[in-house]
Image (cartoon, each protein chain N blue to C red):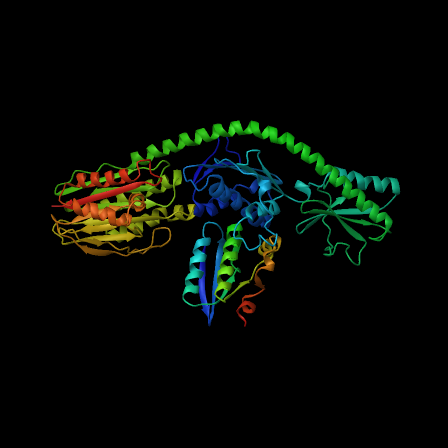
Length: 109
Length: 519
């Protein structure tokens, strides 16, 4: 399980390969905060390769999105499969996040 | 992770295990449990998603909130998978909590909070979630919707039957759970295997536009869809039928609640037996502990070598080990390792590494080769258990002005010079289990009679880290440097005294150190 980071112009995309859960959420947080520190403002977290997310994983996304907004940045979530999307809908977090159906859409202006 | 089966129980679908208090280990535990769910023959997708998320929540709650992060408190997990149903019970050793006190995370004021969704998700994703009265045991149940585990109340079926016979209606009913649609009426028995699945996809609206079907919720995540021949969904007959179905379902739920109260009493009884299981597990931990100590060989008495090593084990079985190996031609091999996990699997990895390493080291293999052989011997085991280990192997040859070494991610390896200055043996590779062969090898300058080789594990320096301004590693180095003229045994003694003063209680991680000089 890993987080793969790629840069597309000004956008930093992080691919969650495996799970985003209590055991590894801090790693994602550190990764994104380091990027924020370095001046990146536009982020996409891509879930195309993700198995599942737990409440801690959702929580870390909530606090990251808050952090990114505070510095005037933007966080988009991409490629959620049906199960993952349901997770966001159940918790009503779909109203909090900008959710894009594809990576291309998320990377677009 | 410590896995054990109750005595005499080796049935498929039954699993009892103690979960380590390590959040990073949860994913591995969850996958291990999922492997034992095969007898339930549940929908793979729900098992891999709903069940894995629900179980992750239950375990992390137990570790983080139940046991308040205390790694010495245990989390016990019991699984029972039978056809059509998986039931897993997770118990912690905390004071419990009131699940009803958890606020709804969907409320606007809670929506931006990072926490508080765990219990909610469990309830949404599992078919049933029960807490014991004390609030420190949760039972998660996932069932097969449809034939195998149909949970449509009998009362609903008899209501449908009444309408069919007394009003002479022709009607068909299906259950809807998730994506599955199973015909439940008419059927030989409730959700009988002979009830075919409906080939026609349902529409999404409540009133189901364009058909005569209407949908009635009959429980959490479960609805019945009914079609009455000759009567539209909005017709009085359909409405009366819908109301009757809903009423019978709600009566059935109430009856279930009463039954739940009865089951809570039975649960208390079970708890007594659970305590006995805990007792046994703790005894097993002690035995594994003895095993670890027995595996560590004594330091051989070698000509021209002054060496001392010690492991102070943690309360539960850790995975620290060392070896000093006499090689041909007066050479000597020194190894230190730290396995990431605890419990039996960590002790097992440790035993495998030590025996594999000794075999190849004794043949005089170069350090990088020794690591490569070890990796080959245990790579699969590491992968399947998702563990990793740091391993540093040094080879000292008489008359050679340097040490050859390979270091797979071991953080604390040093040469201390006569003047008290220290030089680190940097890692040549990531820890084994993360990195892979071929392994790198390096050399570091060595003055026999003057220099001191010092290897130690995190457990030693972490103990000290909390006490003073200097980092734990700096404190270890300082102590060794100040005492560098003394025999190795004394240096070691000073080091462990320092740790004992810092934390007199039994440590939560193994503390290991080796000091060695050649003459």
